[in-house]
Image 1 (spheres, helix red, strand yellow):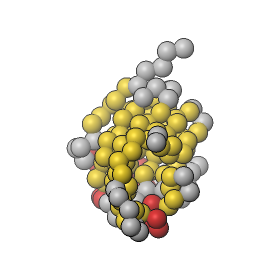
Image 2 (tube, helix red, strand yellow; image 1 turned 30 degrees about the horizontal axis):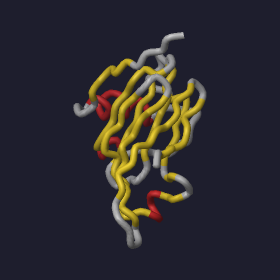
Image 3 (cartoon, one colour; image 1 turned 45 degrees about the vertical axis):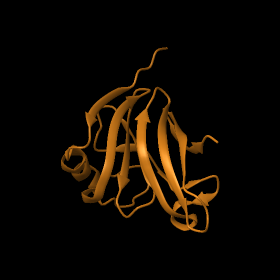
Length: 146
């Protein structure tokens, strides 16, 4: 079966803040009931992946990457949400001075992410290519290539 990725909106515009955020704030979503401050969005995009709308959101002052999956036709309720806050057991808020999501790109079954890691202790910064598996009923962990 052919599944294509369809990028709906380039979100360098305030679309996410003006359209999707107000509808989510009153949502009775199945995922966690945590509050996102959408006024601090620095990067976001949405695509159709395997018959679901999938969105990533990077929020200033939050080291985690938020990935949300929506049922098509129901933009006000997200089906799944996953906070990507660690890689290989190292937590972004504790083990790194900076984690910067450089580029994010949707594919048929994954979200590819270029990430810059700066360790909190001595060490050199590293830029690595990583991916997050996207399935109809799950959002995977961040897996980085050596």
